[in-house]
Image (cartoon, rainbow, N blue to C red):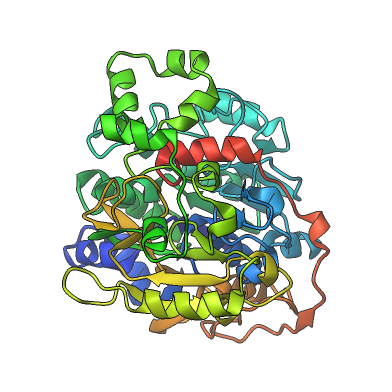
Length: 515
């Protein structure tokens, strides 16, 4: 049977890659497209790491696995919960491969910490793989547990870069460390595939999208893509191997920052309290400035140890207060709606939800940029984009941010639209998909597929029936259509994993996803 090697490029986008392909800078990716099948992959909304890596691996929309973004807002209970891997309620494609007797390797995929036992190997990664005060994961990130000794001794492996990139101005050691780790992820995954003769391996390059966010198409990002391209050439030469290159979502240069909660406040949907963040903003004390000073004087670790976390939380990022601090800055009984970043909006059930949603959707559809163009590609009721048992705990309204627009949920700047604040690029729902290998015919450009199609397609290529609860379909990319049917879903209790919610939030803050 032909084996499968999947390279997951977090934030991979044809908008970014195609100019480099045309310029001859990514020859191996170009060859894979020319001799195989490729497409634009449509992500679930919102187009973010959480939930879309699980949308890929489960073949399901968030309404079926239970996680819609990095956080979940509950206005009735006046709380905001940070999501981790334990909050996903689903089996994944490697569970089905294992159930069929096929061993697997999963390297560096977000939402896989702490690692759970598979028949094969798991190496945790992504922003949720964090532990302890310094958030530097020194152990406990592999299954089997003893595999981390080999990673440390043979590869000098690290789960996260040190120093961590946190600014557009950091182009030295921070970038070099990311490039080193991207190489290590690929090397470990390749070696597992070859040396352990695994039928299936998946590797995620999460920090690639961090480079997108901070640099878009500048030199640090181009270097990373060229590194990936060199590896694609090597992986394409593996015998009896179908190579799949895919992403959880796409990316595009940021042109507009839209502060959704400030807009909700100005339009009567949210009532603000005054908090200490307001005073810090007035005197210019932000987390970026504090971090910049601390890095310059080598005091990052000292401050992390000596300044109580509760005090650190009060210092806002330049975008304003986020996560739990948002709830402390609103009057819940007078607030009709509160938003997360990049799309989800939650309506207070103390009000007439349907009436609020109707007004909110109409008002958001009328929002335009400085040129008079609509700011959103669409504004939807949740049930228009989700289905499944978890729709009722998800957002009530979801905006599809137009490419170039970053929907920022920060509170405190008292502005609604600005030029980009921190990120040079923002996520989009249009990612990439390429398949090439002995089983894959040369169909060229397939147009657009759904990210949820990838799992059932991989399962079919391995002779495994499609679970009846998945949303996706088997893609018509094979020389011979796989002879597969359907099967009952695996009990999701067999799946699991996920770090402590507060530790996940700390890592997200460092990367700029949440503050």
